[in-house]
Image (cartoon, rainbow over all chains, first blue to last red; front, side):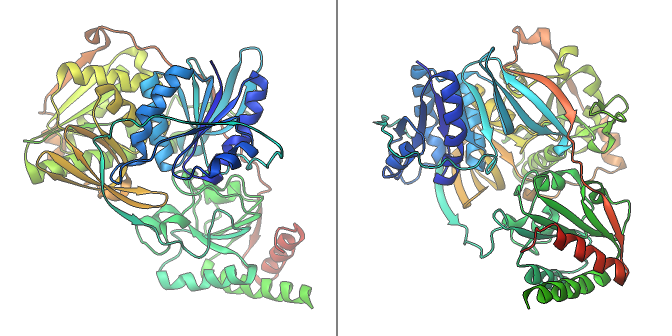
Length: 322
Length: 255
């Protein structure tokens, strides 16, 4: 038995993994199997997007977290012996993948950012970031299944392939686990989403007080962009929602343009913006690390630069529209 | 009595990572080492839980003999005993090996109710050792913990996930990995540093563990990540800001 398996928390992440899994399955001359729970209607959708088999996990007791699926998934993996097992690197996905890899006694490439298939060795050559993003580690897995967690939006979603058929199989329920949910507090959906924004204005510690966000917001409004920030701004100062912080442990973004305001350019933050098409920065320290990774920068005090920059963009964009 | 183990890693200080000129090769020879930042929150959480509930806190690390320097540092942060699992071959372990070695050492030498790890290490940040260690010890676990409370023989942990907070109850013994927002690690003072040198250290050698630990993951290369950009700088005067705006608009990235 064999196969390329994928496991993801939601449909978006599943489609991204289906895209990469389909190519790998073709090279290995094997099939793609995707896990699914809660919403069995998605089975046909996943098949249309490239799954050959959809493995339905039985519904859980109210107090059981998703991690309770681990024994069922591990048992199935021991029976089917997949070649490759890819998991979306969401908060839950990372835990589940590490625990599954532990039980299967196999290697796991965490937070894989790029992968190639080596035809001769039938091995995945996988890249991931280390030292806070300052370096790239290239790894291969010496054991089966070859496992990786894939950061969200690393791959484009699969497109529907039209007339496809596949199997849907329900897996047997396992015993409830020892970890019980006693409360859930879902996050209120915020208006702007930094992960999809084309224009991002990002603030860092150079901003002196929360009220000054207004200056940054004005620029964002003129450019039709969203506000984002560094980890301390969200987690220590709470000036902006936590889902707007960019970096190794936060959002990784791919905007058309990123403008960093008062950001020093710590590697953990920079790692989150490396895929931006254009990187710009405003900082009063001309030796700030952010300038080393910027296309265009302005060396100056953000409090004098921002109003003028906003005015200039407004003028230039306004002129273009007339 | 609550017996806590906190795991930590001695990692290269990222600020010391240099690249050799004209290549992507990393120069790490002269880098200094420190206790992984993420692990400082795990150590602090262990020590503050012990202050509330009594019991004991032991710190454990796996590394090459050079990591011995970490022991005084970790003990100055509050734990009363350190376990040092070391071997010259333990300097390039991958996460599955580290977890197996920790599990083996803990099983043979330590009694515990709660194990606390950081969210990931400061160097590899694979975020695997905590979950794998729990599996190897066959105890329940959870990750992403932003608040932790101990009630008798169970813990209540608030997990910060992508879609909101999930509060879970877990019977002890258990393992958790904690996020930086869980606490503010105290800075050791002179008194703590002096006290640290009097605290016991248990040396565990690879041969004491009576088994070998084969890697599941092989590193082919570690190279500096290249992030080449234009690097054009403008000044803050009016004419330069106007030029900056022109250049940006010309790139066509703002519609």
